[in-house]
Length: 478
Image (cartoon, rainbow, N blue to C red; front, side, top):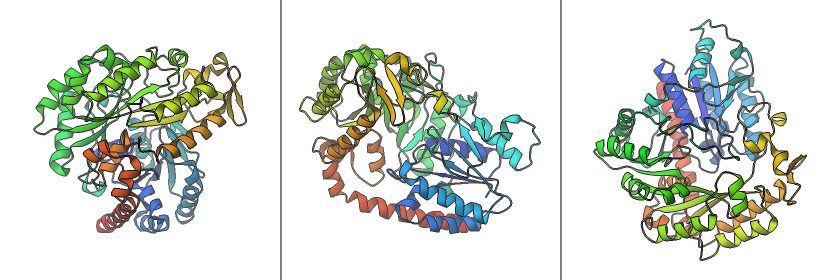
């Protein structure tokens, strides 16, 4: 095996990650053998030692590197992954260990860290490792390797193989477009501020990928990875005419959407429904109008909620809706945070789910291994923040990141025991993998479905089956 890619999330093991399989597709296209493995499936079954034994049988002088996609790794698992790398390094001291992802966990004993999009760099790096190329490039003599924008994105696809163990109930990741036309002040993603229509894939490419996944694996459900799927009416009409109407089957999908754009262009409603939208994740972010305005979301949050109430009672009655919320925005106070919490559990809340997160501020001086920064990262003092040894503090409102994290942890625990909270957002895609019906996701709360489907046991059982199948796949190839 030339390349081994480990990925996963201990919160949602078995879900496929788009970046990993995008890189695997490019490597395979360039004649490299690749095995993608969900390491968190092994972690869930407490079988990391088993994975090490499996890898020891397949790693040899033709294995150029072992990589970790750390985007969804949890800090609490860092020690286990470091021990895993230590054991691999002990048996294979010359094996190169690499890591990357949109959020790179600082693992020990990693030889190279890849940042940002890396379709180009991963091939160049592997060519050098395999001695296929004698390219002299200073970039690859450094520990941190910066990615560049992939110019062939419009015609790129993810190609799965039988060894990827695609399950018929998987919701596969797919990029309909890459980049974002907006530039929200809290966002540190690359490729912001694009022009409308600039980053959309060719229609023929999308039809080919969707058709192949259906014909080979029976896949009809997707996670759209677009930063903002509904960034224009023109984009949705283009997809309707040249993609969805060309398919001989109907797809279903979950996507990130801007609610204020649906309010401005209501024709989006039927375009999204007709396309197969089943779960929508909005970015309302705050109910504080002052905070909303300063981050670039000037539409009155109360008007957004009123619109959403009507939308949920009518056109989106059979679609799960959820939203992200950021705690700690410039005008947030303890009082506004408590008001948001009160709203979320009230009868006024039309959302099926909500996803709180603390405002992230990482100044360049504290992020040597990061390339892209948000407006708040770069100019935090301008908005009243100061950096402390515990995170950040808003000198004007007195709110701290420590308080926000603690409040969010309490809120998540309270939500998951609430009869108002459901499997919404991309969690809906995940639980579909275990046979939970759309109807039950719409009707039942999180705790009700958790009990009805014995989900904890189902996840453990499916992870064990996956681990067995990975071993069979690798041993068969040997």
